[in-house]
Length: 433
Image 1 (cartoon, helix red, strand yellow):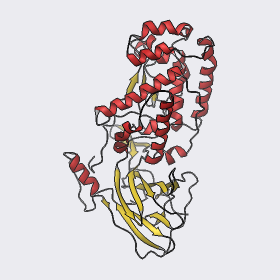
Image 2 (cartoon, helix red, strand yellow; image 1 turned 90 degrees about the horizontal axis):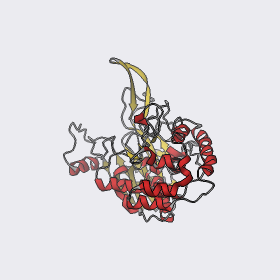
Image 3 (tube, one colour; image 1 turned 180 degrees about the horizontal axis):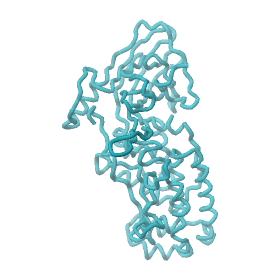
Image 4 (cartoon, helix red, strand yellow; image 1 turned 135 degrees about the vertical axis):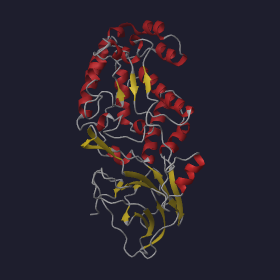
């Protein structure tokens, strides 16, 4: 980007799974495979956000099922029950999976001969059934079947022959900057498909509610959830390591900067912010719908913090630090307005930058240190050309972080703020209580 931040192309690299013919598609031959994938993605939001583009959320190109409407998970559970209720008949009451099929997936041999030999009574499943069950659920808020995290437009659509190809598109995957990163992502999906082919995922979908955007848009909680995915695959017999995906995390959540005061390490890292599509407005030759990209989010992490003695504040407001799995380690998110365009939500709210994060000694009622983060060059440079290489990009990013900036003569410790909807996020657009 112009400010030096790494980003993907915004499209491409959507993983498409199927078979050489529609009848060979695993999603048509084993109907509960798609059910397992959708259910597992719902319970592990890291799979939706780690590999996605910058534009996420209900009005993005790949919204999650539980981001579309309030009762989406409820309706999905009904669909799951219909599929589960008929599955025993298709498989003749035998819950075991065909290990020969798994061997074919692992060694790349022709799946038709061995697959049909081991499938037996499962071939009686009508190919249109999976499409009929999920077509009206895997959609966006407007009912568009293409803009969905799991796009089944070409699974077995009744519209035309080109829509009956047995294909499922995973639209939450964006083009990564390196081929090996793409291969790691493909390996992850391949292992999940092989696992669910053998053992269907039967866990009930979690209703995250506001916790979905409050916690899993922050790097720490997303990485923690992805660790659960890796552990599940290891227990299922797939030796995948979390270290293989370290480049994805650094690419998705670049570090803004870090400081250390009083033995406390403070780190600022880019987080995910869902952008919303605004209402229709008249434009040249028709109507226009703007995307509000004026709001950004960062994660503030403090390691070695003693909450009874020290507190963290951002722009004079206390941060709602959340404890992690490590003693003395706390994280939270800061949501702020980065710039003020004419078309945005709440257009009268001014810009909140620069962000000044301060470490406050509660007993002494004074700040002992801090740091400053800018969303643009602090010297007022307005870049008009993109960085020529990664070195120039890094220089532009580093110029926006200062390891100084606090109020030494602070006399009042900011009070604790509570946001019942988003307890782990300080929204600077919302007035303090």
